[in-house]
Length: 285
Image 1 (cartoon, rainbow, N blue to C red):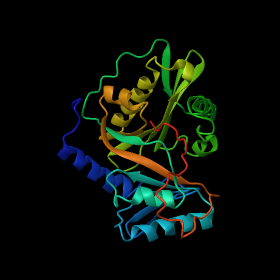
Image 2 (cartoon, rainbow, N blue to C red):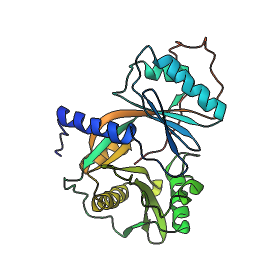
Image 3 (spheres, rainbow, N blue to C red):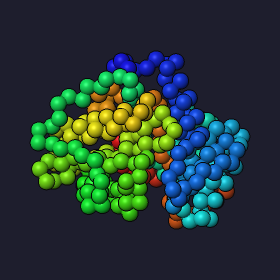
Image 4 (cartoon, one colour):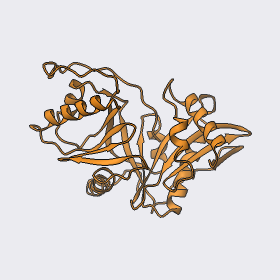
């Protein structure tokens, strides 16, 4: 892939494959299930998230309201992953009117693993390694709490359940005996796309190429496992680093979230058009 990015035709092909195999037919972990209602594809576990929807402008208001009422009745968090090419164009406003708060905007980026990205030399005295035991995972979770805003670090209990499974890997970077950065790699079965999540570095160790080395290690494993692409939902802070090593932007994405205790909006409160509350998310690369 060239530095100028894939052409519009190629970009559309990749997006179509991503939609078909990762959003319309999402891979789920033990304890999760996929539910379909019309064009909506919902993944449900301890929380719920809308992986895909292809709503018309006329059916969208009732569909969004139904999802909100369902999640509220079950007392679970609901996230609606809204991609810039999703329909209808009014969907973001409908989500806002129904009590969803947006995470910071991100960009879905992709690296074609047939390319040969140049990650540069590793940082001095840096060791990047796969995490294989609970103690290492706990250290990775600790550094994520340093890297991200308060309350936005990794959930140790959630990832303990997946440690050692074939679809999930955690990498940590250390300088000496100190873990300074960590990131996750998702490896869904039977898909062409692996993905990077949760990459973050402790503030005092930033600017040394550590994040880049963590990306390189995860990309290498995805290539070794036979994946064609690696994707990232990149925040503005990580996008320039990823572009320098060959990732290309595909489309904007925003996670819209309703908490389990958020009140149901009145049916008469719609079409306000006013700004909703904001919610701080974590870097997902």
